[in-house]
Amino acid sequence: MRRIANGDKDAGRELMERSLGLVLAIGRRMLRDPVEAEDVAQDTFIRAWKAAPDWQPGRAKLESWMCRIAANLCLDRLRKKREAAMEPPPEMQDGAAAADNGMIANEAGMRVLAAIAALPERQRLALELCHFQDFSNIEAAEKLEISVDALESLLARGRRKLKTLLMPQRDELMSSLSEAAESTPEVM
Amino acid sequence: MDRKQFEDLADMWGGHLSHWPDSVRAEADAFLHREPSALAILSEASELDNLLSTALLADGGELLEHRIMRSFPKPAFDADWRRPAMAAAAALVIGLAGGYAGGGFVPVQAGDATSLDYADAFDGLTEDWSSWEWSDA
Image 1 (cartoon, chains in turn green, purple):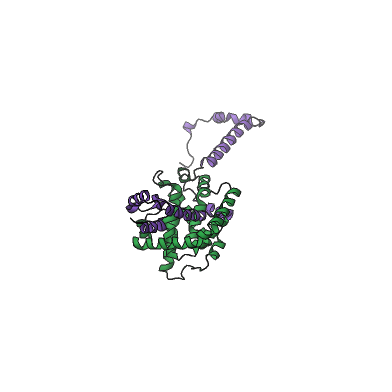
Image 2 (tube, chains in turn blue, purple):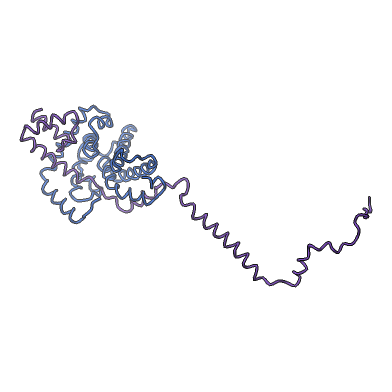
């Protein structure tokens, strides 16, 4: 981060190569729009690069920090959409439609993304913050402007629905994942 | 804590107690140690966690990487300012050295000898200026 703060573009590229996959996946899971997800990814890196001089090592893992920036940017976008009373974010009934547009690293990932995309927005966001971003229940509830009880209810419903959708295909998904791992030794 | 509560928590927070809220973790841990079936509940929740982790990464492709790198902020003060400054200094030194060395190769002209006598140019003035008066004074 010190190198980035000094304007070292190669260091900026290293950070991007290290965390773009994570950041982009957050946008795709939360926004379900691959174009918006790319915009968020770009905004995330711009913010991270600009904040590089203030970065304090040891306070948080770099990737976790990047992911939090991305998640917050996604929440801002969703909030602005609601506030502007624009068309609601496309609530696709068929999650596969959203997943088709998003290049997730492997076939199993695309199917899981489709299942996540099929969740109602609030359940999806609760899952994103608590499962993928490791927010505490209190933090996540604050972010979503709901009570902790409501958050936990969303989370339970979301995960149960995913369990119903995904667990029957568990063996197939895991074997697809193994094949992907064999053909791509390093995902990151 | 009973089995139903434990199942509900696993449904919410997954198969790793470390991800569960602080407020319930100790109680859940105690339940895990006294109830043999609790491990199976956690194991099933972990399987879902593993499946979800397959959607952890996305591939943006080179175009997106290129687009993002174009946004890399230019430093307010060019950290590589030395390069143009050194080039200008080198050009100046080479110019001066060339000019000085090149001067030796220029043949001396015949008239140049007298031009060197400028110091004596007033030698030809023999008139006594002390007695000179302006004609219109």
